[in-house]
Image (cartoon, rainbow, N blue to C red):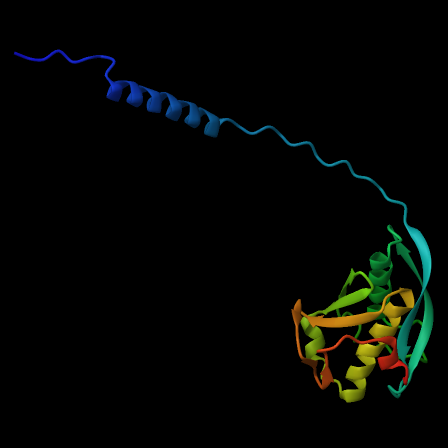
Length: 183
């Protein structure tokens, strides 16, 4: 004699519930997502500012300042500093001055925390093979260009990492305007 089975046993109820949840989950996964709204483009007005940018003389002995015009969409200190460094990387207009990096070398990224600048030099700067005076001039022209805007000191990084030196130049301490005053 066989025992009649209950239709609504606890096992059957749980199994039916799991089947229903899995069908709903399958439908939810197969549903096409809504098309996102494209972002509204906001054209920001660019402002023109004058900045002092430092280069070197042809003998790589003294700093030479050149006033340049930059356009920025925000006039905060970091944006102006980045624009000044971008101009620095492109080189001087005055032919009696010497650019510190070869044409086409990417410009460093500039960050600001309080009164302290952080300059992230691209890895290409480690391959420039400058002598001690060239390396010092590279760091000092950047330092003086940035500290013209505002700020207390400049810490240099290479490819996002803190390094001890760039060639012969010690990078363990931040550079101040006084470090480059004798140029």
